[in-house]
Amino acid sequence: GQQVMQIPQYQHVQEGEDFTTYCNSSTTLSNIQWYKQRPGGHPVFLIQLVKSGEVKKQKRLTFQFGEAKKNSSLHITATQTTDVGTYFCAGYADYKLSFGAGTTVTVRA
Amino acid sequence: EPEVTQTPSHQVTQMGQEVILRCVPISNHLYFYWYRQILGQKVEFLVSFYNNEISEKSEIFDDQFSVERPDGSNFTLKIRSTKLEDSAMYFCASSEAAGVIYNSPLHFGNGTRLTVT
Image (cartoon, chains in turn orange, green):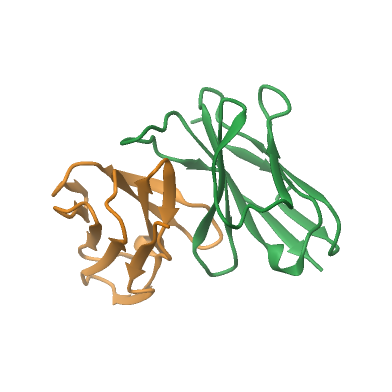
């Protein structure tokens, strides 16, 4: 079945630094979504990418969908303490949205 | 902004007992889901529901699990005979649309933490 892998599992970032989390699917995806889960909270939708090679930006967050529609990345610039949480990618294929294991981000002030 | 609501927020039950987790999806949404998250782990798909029937289910969703939309607003997940390994946070979610290529974002509820003792 479809598997979505995400790395790294943990990311410890100095405030102000940049980092990237990567997502890879075992199958070609129809689209990919990104969610953020704050500690103790529920996943909250951030963005959806549909087209091959698509790049979308939300302030300091840049999302990219690979040309083959099997991988994606989230790049955060100038990390702030408000970026703390777990970022999940979720790949959509065969009417099912499958979540990666998430990247848990902690920020050192 | 409309929300998905889940009750109860925390459910403690003994092994072998039946539990029903309740959800009220966003009113104009047509697709409903249950996911679970074991503490510190990934969000795992259980089941999706559309037009009063299951559209997809995972290997986790075995005969012990069932879903129901008993009226126009509630969406429930029943676990017939709970096991210790069923302890997890159970999230209900809903979306406006889901097709072959495109599905609307999922709106998640705050979850029900199920503890099986």
